[in-house]
Length: 232
Image (cartoon, rainbow, N blue to C red; front, side):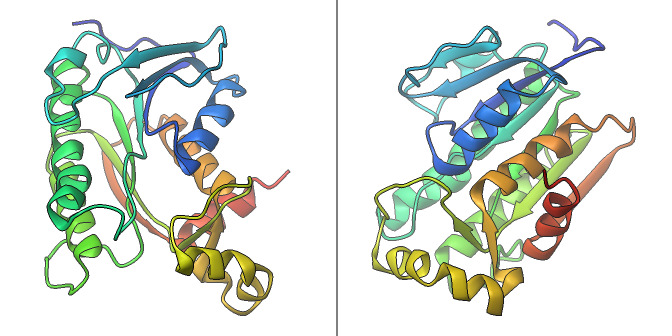
């Protein structure tokens, strides 16, 4: 097993074809503190970059085959997920909980000193009492990650994530939120976050090498504070 080395960081990103993961990838590739980005996904990104390595993996229920690709990583950005209502409840739990736990298991076995940055969600419930399946499942995934043995885990719990690029919204609620975003942002600033600023905060968190063990849960207000400190 290769040990992480000093200097530019080696990052692995899961979910780079998604809204937040895609922003994280672009920010990481442009970041001088990042030396290599390994993207794990089911389909190719269709881009090339000297820092970028793509690894295709179809079945996240079994990540054993990724052990070599995950060796020697310094940090992980995990943005894999799906929208409530787009899949069955069983599939939602499998993607949200099982895939996260299985990836973390193999990553920790290959790179036990990795810093982990996890895209959770507002209202995530580690106790499991929420009536919302999404909140229960995200909370279950959080709890497993915090117990997985990584030296540092950052849990990001954004509220509404505003897409900074045009896209097909997954449902009516998201179409309405996007339409009223300008007013919503003014009235409820701690209930929104831009996708690019969220992604940047997730990457910046794992690039900070404090040498101390820490588990940090960041709510939307905290994420905004981090992002705004680094506004261009």
